[in-house]
Image (cartoon, rainbow, N blue to C red; front, side, top):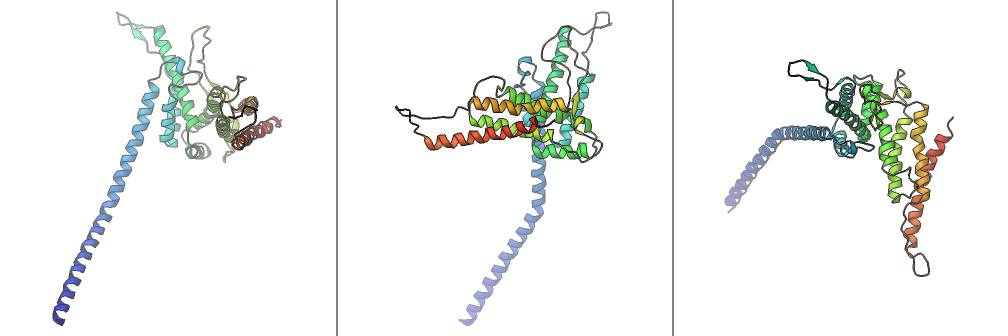
Length: 322
């Protein structure tokens, strides 16, 4: 019986060792395969990112309706946001460099007559080129506005502070970002020029959040001595409009000088003024006029006052500057 017990123990020990050997071999095989899987997953993620960018650019280029390009380019904004979120800082700066160059340099394609001689571009060809340039400028402005904070900081550091190959384009993107956020995402979207209440406190808070992104640009301090805030500028020369044209299309010529800064910062006071008109705070009263939702109402009042106070703080700060 002792011998039998010893034999069974030996058999179990051998089986256990064999099982452990198989487990160890499996773990070793997994470790060999794991880096390959990681590499494949990484390649798939990169392919998906590039595909997302390409589809976004296709969506932008499909926009030709002038009504959807100005004053707020609603038709292309979703595509611009997708591209900005997917692209790396150098890819965004390069796109801006390429498109701004094309806006200045591309001319309508001339046709050819029956005898083979070159003819002047038709009015339709001129118009198509004009709208395409305006579309690309609006798209770059929207892309600039939607650049995530970490990507923006990387672009400032790489292209501006360290003198990257796309420094002029990066500086232009900063100007376009400040202008687009203020004019399109704040003033136009929330109708700040109309003497009517905000639809909600959330709108006031969102307007404040957008303006905080503009504040970051207005208060930028570059780490290089050869760039200053007035170098944040964008200028185009290739947008040629017909005589007596008074539509929304025109060349851009903006830089972050004192007047521009004051104009952008004035949106803070516009937020305050509109918020004081009203923020559509919900109040429930009984037949005697007594407030029933006192707790939630007081909470919303405090929230609204905080939003107004934040905007007023920055409005006062800029008003106090010489």
